[in-house]
Amino acid sequence: MISAMILSIGDELVLGQTVDTNSAWLSQQLAAIGVRVTGHATVPDDQPRIEAAISAASSTCDVLIISGGIGPTEDDLTRQAVAAVMGVPLELNPTALATLTTFFARLNRQMPESNTIQAMLPRGSQMIENTCGTAAGIKADIARPAGGNSRVYVMPGVPREMKAMFVRDIMPKLQSEGGGAAIVSRTLHTFGVGESTVAEQLGALMQRGRNPSVGTTVAGGVVSLRVNAYFDSREKTIEEAERTSAACHQILGDLIYGQDGESLQQVVAGLLRQAGKTVATAESCTGGLLAKTLTDLAGSSALFSYGWVTYANAAKEQLLGVKSETLASHGAVSEEVVIEMASGARARAGSDFALSISGVAGPDGGTEAKPVGMVCIALADAQSTRARTFRFSGDREFVRDRSAKMALAMLRFKLLGKSMPF
Ligand code: ATP
Ligand code: MG
Image (cartoon, rainbow, N blue to C red):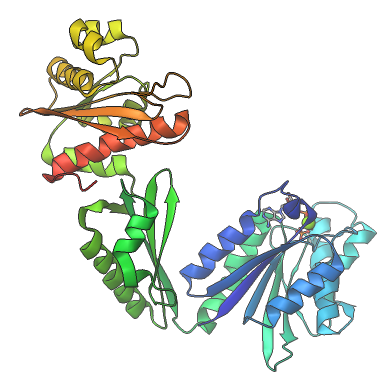
């Protein structure tokens, strides 16, 4: 399997003024064709640093993919650095010069003298045509200290030009040299338990060095398992990725709600659609976030009927029929109140299910009995209305986000006919 390092060059990248999107994009493309990326590096427009990065990377991997620093200006030093590491001078490449001249002629413009540098390539290297700009790319071999060569590709920093050059010229070469090797990734999503709990349950599947590897990442309370398989044939890679994904499913069961691009609300919507059921919402502290989440999906009118935002006690009473005694004796954030909110919403909407949420989103309003982050959620169906109390620890946005997701998770387990495992 071919290994590759990605090197991005530019002061603006190191200063954080421009986000290095080239490396992320290149990594995804390389994974798709079975090239194993062993690292990313970013260096400023500084020749000694560029040289050091090229030497270090080329001694450890088969291919080094560079973007940036091949423009016509003083701060564009990548070609000089590549030549220096190769120990060769820059030479005028007649084809590159002719392409440049034609490029300017087509625009009816005089070619500035400074652009000539873009036709200079390290001796022994080859030019890669740039179909969208003036900076030709470079393909060169760099001798490794330990013997053998490492291949270097230099591309423009401008994302549009880089992408065009990579897809047209470099990707097909790497793909054919890779001999069918493949990387296949699957991402499985869970919600409701922490990352360490998931990792503990997965045990040996997460052992470092395992192929396929299993790693976890967390975003927005969603703990995702990333299964990455690297093998010499695409078929075997897919088979092994599937086998490991199945092993994860075996262990975590219904904790896994979906995979790859699937969101919790998509999965819940799918289950509702399958069952031909509808849901209504009654929200307090989430201010409509749950309804928004459900209606983010196209075609949600088939499964979502009504949503209430009943922030004030009076609204809970008038719009949902919550009893004033319940509010007075238990307070707005209580299982008793969310139960009345959910059953009131369900009756008024005529829906199969209703979800209700009332909690202390913070940062103010917490008490010892009802601290910030305490949230009550209820789910009503034809048989009963059940409530749970959760405690989310985070800022206002965090509490509201997790509340909406937890309500969806409750509905998901109800639709699966299972009890919540957390
Ligand atoms: P070229 O090699 O094509 O001359 P350059 O680095 O010399 O590229 P710049 O003017 O520095 O050209 O960059 C061109 C544009 O591309 C800028 O907007 C820059 O921020 C952007 N860019 C360069 N590298 C990256 C990167 N790795 N990710 C995202 N944008 C980038
Ligand atoms: Mg630059």
